[in-house]
Amino acid sequence: MSQSYNRGLIEDFSRWREFSAGMWAWIFHKFTGWVLVGYLFTHIAVLSTAIPAAGQEAAVLQAGDDVYTQTIVTLEELLLVRILEVGLLAVAVFHILNGTRLLLVDLGIGLESQDKSFYASLILTGAITVASVPTFIAGAF
Amino acid sequence: MAERYSSFQQGGTMWLLQRLTAAFLVVVLSFHFFLLHFVHHADEVSFLMSAGRMETWSYYSLMILFLLTATFHGVNGVYNALINQGLSGTKRTVIKWTLILASVILIVQGIRTANAWAGIPLY
Image (cartoon, rainbow over all chains, first blue to last red; front, top):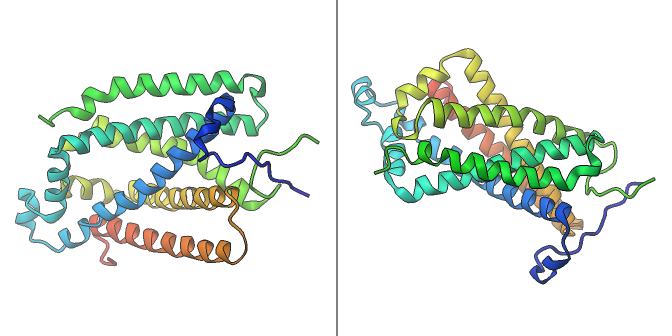
């Protein structure tokens, strides 16, 4: 008989002092998961402007005056959108790295160093995010 | 046996599918970010460039598979997070079917968008 482990309500923030590395990894994975699935729905909604754009004249498409190109260009001109994209990258990179860590844990690999691999995920996420800022901000000003 | 730290049923198909889609998404999501932010840049996006990529059969099928796996992994993740918070009974059934409906709408809309770029008349 399978049994769930009761972690208690993590939204009770006063408990944070009791949390170990594994608990933080679980909370961060959950939080980044919510952000990513929310973004997935938003992403498809924005990209859907390609549907009306496909019916526009070839000359309009060639000039980039179609509704899809204009929507993306307008969004990318906003500095706030660029900053949110860096945030999205950070969230995605952490979820990918910690997800890889979880897959390894599921396979029984590196169980003893699961706290160290969580810290490594955090540091690597920070490094990749910082290194990506110039690329993500390019053309915004 | 050691205590299990999971809200999934042991040995369940959903548990396995969540991991298999995870392994796939680690690679494809990294590729997606790399291609669309580092090879191409955010301020260079245009309908014709997106269409040019999607007209390639291999890219189109990879993106459809990406849509299907990401939707499954994301929505199944939300469902399991809610179960972990204590979702049960009628509420659980209602939320389950709401999530399935949301997934179907997302997948249909995603395929319509991909078809619009690929020049497939079904959109």
